[in-house]
Image (cartoon, rainbow, N blue to C red; front, side, top):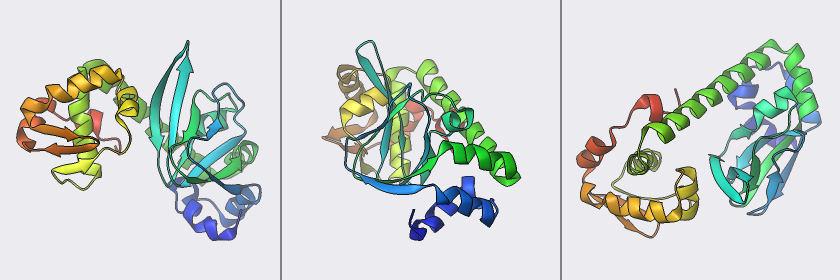
Length: 232
């Protein structure tokens, strides 16, 4: 991997506390690659040969079963996937594909496990990241099981509004069909849910969302940091 990318990778919390010697040893076997949109990077059930680091672009983590598929998460720069399979030396539980042109670092999983055994700071950082991933899964499950489809959509829009800077008008970061999958709905149910939010001041034009009555939407959605704040 070109050394010009080292600072980007090193800045991640996962790698920032490592000794220089172990970091450079880890990077010796890594390489960086550019991928066009809609390229499948890994397939569920395959051996976890590489830890992936997204430097630019975005990646969809998804799963398929019995003729159906669902989007589970979106990975954006700069972050890793799929760490648990790498450490456990287990098959991938999810597939991954690029959503747009993406630059990704591939680090051999065997090298990650070897450095995990000898670098205490790296091992602690991995445990911390896996704990954060576990908490995010719990929050996603709570969102899915405790809320109606209308409540899930309302809270998703509030989270997206915050990510977009907090303005009344903002754009969805992917098409509605994929949003339906992320929220555990069919496209038809999502369309009905958007119509159901009209009385709360939400208007939709394509992928452009406008929240005309912030207070009313928040009263309905009742956002909860124990569900909606994925940073804690």
